[in-house]
Length: 291
Image (cartoon, rainbow, N blue to C red; front, side):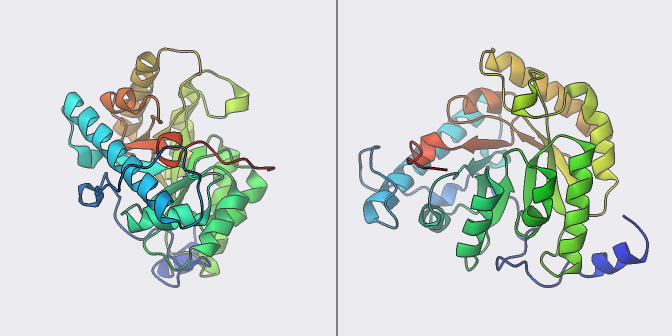
């Protein structure tokens, strides 16, 4: 995107907040947040996600404290500063009230898999600030316009066609005053060439990165991956780290490496992850849903 339209959009990027009541690009990158580690009394992990109850708050506070301790220990073992690693709670299927609790506990970034569900939560929680939404699930191009209204980042871009759809959607959102900043974009890397799981193969990363980096509406932030279900996590994370190293050689500001979840975050951190996406270890088992 270039020319007069892009210049006009650029002038508006510090303008009105988006339709969810925040500016999707505001605020510094959140790290593990040592200052938010107070734990509540012991509560059984089986406590259900009952909206806003004191018991649920205690469960989330205790689990959050434990996760931050795990991240600190993993960073120490890897000789890294824990401030280099963001904990991204994955809140798919959990109510907005859980996100409000975690926000009070110092979490400002949240990962969601489904655009419709995330958009509804963004609307429900529009008064909370700062609040940054990361879409980490696969995204259809026809949902790009919806996502551009509320997302701070999309971590699952795996094709130039999707990048173009997001570019167009973000341009429209900027023009409409629904956002004021470019969209953070991570390239999802496929480590098993399984089309059902999404991602671009490592050999395709450079061309896609160049395409994203050329856009005024998108900001290339780094890469994301999910290791194959049957694989050696250390080997796969090491492979991903090599892909990231080559990307940073060409695009030095693409510093984000989103890798590691509840069961393997220590191994991911050992191989350079800067963002661990944690659902079950923080939120508990997903509630029963008909969706």
